[in-house]
Image (tube, rainbow, N blue to C red; front, side, top):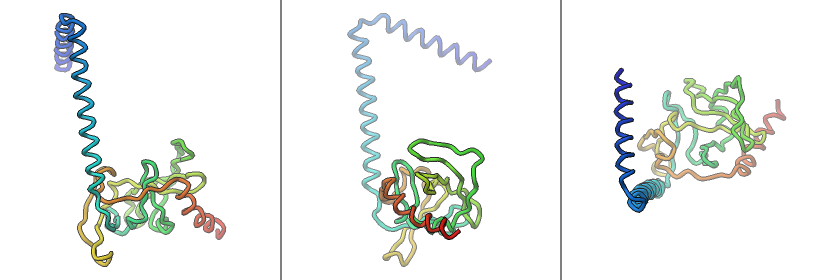
Length: 198
């Protein structure tokens, strides 16, 4: 009943707005539309400016990522890379710190990337992200909420402030970019060696 009243009220508001619009000449309508578009563009530019400021204020120092649940070491920040919009690990030893659980249904997300498995902390089974197969190579892609970020101080000899982030775009550290080809070149030989020794 309450939802019906809200719907009726919204419909009445829409009809009143249309009646007011019909009373205006085309020039006035164009002016209203232009004003709305200008405000929208200004808001988008302001958001872009704020995002750029956040990016430019990132800290170019060392950090480590630890499991959010058990606080065990996961990966050095200098082994975390940004590939397109994905945060990947280019450390071959990372595979020793995870438990892999195959998915029943593989998911092809395009660009020769297949979501193959989920990855978990090998100590406490906190989910850390997903394992993708990229051109035949296993690539761990991490979820930012699964980790705490710990700043390294004094050339990495001491640990500093600990932070958590809800989205990758909010991470206050510099993360180097990597291309798909560079990542495959880095991870491929070690995975090939593992296959040959099995």
